[in-house]
Length: 586
Image 1 (cartoon, rainbow, N blue to C red):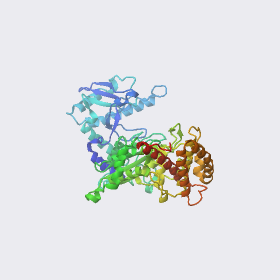
Image 2: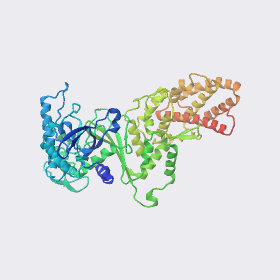
Image 3: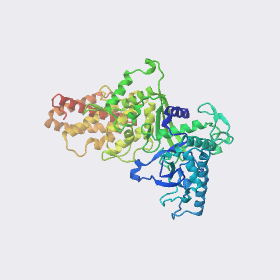
Image 4: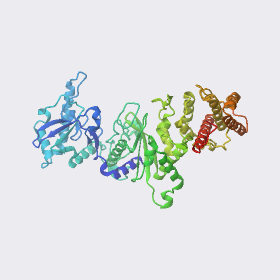
């Protein structure tokens, strides 16, 4: 199905894709030919800082390996095009390297003449034949800067020869011959369902560096069986996965196209990449909202509203919905690893992204707004906090990709997320919007409905762990109101113990709070009355004794109760200021 969806998308892209068995590559040198075959070499290299000015264009390509690698049609390395040998560590070519360069150039010449020999009236073919009959690169002044690995293209007048339709057709037939099966008999293609000549191996791998990896970067094959132990009945290559030339070439061409697109791919910070597309030209802007660095709250609010108010095309117009496809890839040596495959209606995508933001939005009481956190920051907040920021490369490996899976499948974040998050909150003594958002997401996607939490303070909640968090926030408020210039607050000293063993900790802190309340009755009577009332109301809500120990999920509810109580306080202060009133809580 994956290859079918890729080839369907290739049909929709049409001319946007390179020609069959062509791939974009940077051109370093141009072999300029006159009509009589006279040749000059032109430098197109650019410095590293001017890389955006490099000349890149689709050129003939097919995967090649081994010691006697074959040439590409017209555009290849200087070793093939000009016979420039590879240099050793002493910057001098060995006899073996010179011999191999001669062999490669001869193979290149034969392939180029395969196209040119029968085209008597083509000026480009005539110039190419004249060039080779005159000795080719033998009489050419080749600068010392030309390296064997540099890419060289051929131009006649203002024509790039590799862009000629006849060159493209000849190159396609050459690749079919190279990559066909041993007997090259037609067979049933599993992708398109037609009978056609089948591939022995996939001609085009994923471009080197297109899939981020912690290991060595390499080209990657989507389908590859090169050992008998890997294949059914000991069969290697594509014997048990018959794919025709057209489907194999187009599927890999469109995959490379998606990997190179900024609008249809997401490279994860540690390794792996996701690409996505739609079957029709549907609106997939929800993905930009999911991966945006600073998602617009207005756009998110509109998406959430549409989730609750807008019917789907199925219920309104009885029309077929567009389809959304997403593919997550990793790389293991030279083989691609399909980590996730998503195939859902496009309307479901919008609803899914809306639910993702709805499940983790955080209310900012000070501003009276809802804050939403980008997905990458939710992964990053499980890393180490340092001076109000998250330390580089400290986030758990692979968590961003796991959160993407959770977002697009409407599932809970991985089980490791909550212990990791709680451990970092306690170790760093740092709690920000991102960590609150991730915690709320974990609780709202718990299988237990009692774990689900509202965006704002839930005054009706009687969960003991949630009440303990609220109580700790009031005790902290009492201390900071009575002693505003403290260097170390209750949160700095007791938050971890209160969140894990609230029974003993909160009881002791309640006793200590009497001294602070006594001070407030003397200096800030209004604040003393307000805080003492809140404290008494919270204690009255406990139906049983406070729990002695909390599980990780209960600790999460504790943190949410703490944050909700604080946000409610700032909300009351803000509302009082808007009315021009003084708040006793300041």
